[in-house]
Image (tube, rainbow, N blue to C red):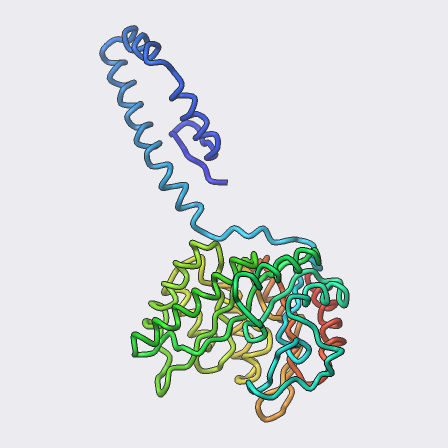
Length: 356
């Protein structure tokens, strides 16, 4: 609760506004009578106090805007209600998915489902009512489709809690036009998030051609995205995904430089383990959770480019999560070959236990 202090008392904002309102209702006649009954010294003191009070009231709207200009998502506290299921592991099951942009899914048509029905499917299969769609499985982002999507989610008594967005434009390119395209793309997905009632999106940081990641350029680009997202009440998250352009410590530098409550970290349990040793990976998770807000990706393992499986120490990772008093959602993103249903169900139950 935000408080205003007058030197003697502390009032919360609603109380302050009420007091200001009632003062304004007093008639000028009463004010004049009060002044006439005072001696000169008391009258000067009283007028000085009124001037100070008026100055404080004039500043209240600015203070109120400052307080309001930060995300205030009311995250659930029940462990199962904090769990979401990501669409990414089920991409092969979603109508229209094409592995390389051309090859159709290998899953029989009878087992496939429309993206707008994913929330209902997740609720029925896993008793989970939060989902995280992936940008690449959206059949459309037209307003009419988004309205249908949101209606279907509502009917499933569910909610979209994040959208994992991939991008094609580098936020740290030396080409200003390329950075502008990155901003435009992210803004479009912020609009999609707002249309679906999602409190956040994850935006991808694309590699710059023949360029090393640049904090200053990336921060300048993403600050503009965060400013736009704030106006839509949507938080923008950055994930430790691509080992080059989304190195976790690079992400932390960007977030700290932008210094906006609307730009946060999305810690992925497994991604840094694929590219680095355990010491680096768990330091990375710790650094990411220090800047996390609304979403993280829960994995118990992943397969690297050489086909080697790496194992996530879930107990260690959830200990880090709790150390930072993280209150956001835990999105289950099983990431290994094969049927995702049973591994997802197992991860959900483990996550519920760790959050309990």
